[in-house]
Length: 540
Image (cartoon, rainbow, N blue to C red; front, side, top):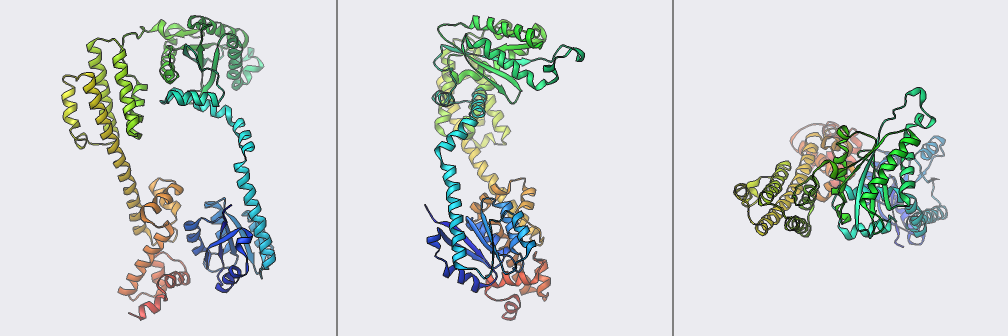
């Protein structure tokens, strides 16, 4: 295993050098990757190096060890902290315990004692990593999480395009027994409010949250002997969704009858009306999203048909045979491919659209309407993300031409693919540009507010509406510096200007560039330029 990374923080250079020299770090399982003279400097070192352990003194100028420990605990909770102090102070020890400091050592540091502590920490870190990698433990956690993971994936199947092979693999992994059917049917189960008055309610009705569980149990019991099912809850609509596998031994017609019996039985036993919307069947699991949407549409007819029974979409809407319809799911699949790519995904999405056009024996007018709908979706996408059609190499001209008389299917496919590629490239450029603009805004904000002693990364991120963790990663990627290092550079560059162009006292300049303590300002200045501010000015 690689050596763990540790930094030392102490305001006495001799103490740091002595500890570094005396300890056999490799034997203890560590490597010293950095050191600092105080808590303020240590923050920058921690940001840059992200060590596994911080070994810090308590009493230091500018920022003491306990304040540093609190900052580390808030920003890097996995880092272990060891505190050593020349004072046997109970209050220090109490604060250290509150900050979850793992060791509190009194100075002078004993080599044998510190080595033993380091080895203990190494063993603790080894155990943590081993636990996280432990296959049996991971399997146990996986099995406990399986119901949640399973429901999440089943919901994903309804709302986003997933390749057929991925669906088959995941359903096997998640032990969902609906593979290998002739076709599949979606049912959406809506539990109505109880019709019983308060005085006549049973104990179950007093616990309303238990009713959907009871409904689910009844459905599972009644369908168990008839067909294979997956029953789960849709978190967006808080409705229950059923995927039924239609095999050789059962039929869709019989399934609808059984679901009708379910509605009656739930009403009889639980005294709760249940309405089940039943969608179109599909011959592929990658198409269950369409069946789900048609089942939701079927529920929309409840006001006309009435609640408390099944509503089959084919009974209330014309059968879609021979109709070529550009629906929201088809649009979402195309949008996902174009937004995120890669090129192959865009090709697959376009090929899927062309295949539907080829397989559907529709009238020419339907093809025209379908293609116009696809084109309009692309234009809406361009407008939604504030892209200019004129920037997409002739797209505007082609679009205007296509709204007059549509191309043949193959030509339309070529246009759609090329347009999808151009939009994808434009969106990628826009993302990069947006991030650059955000980082430029961050730099501008720092330049305008560096005088503020409280200009923390959290304060900056509130202004940018970004999370500190993501900002820190992107800022370092963009500028090559941590936020703290960049802010320090801005402040010191401004301090040099003031030293060169004004007669302000050092403490005044310190305050003007965001340092509350003159001594700390002088310390940081000397660390960068090799001389104190007063000597720098005197040398001019």
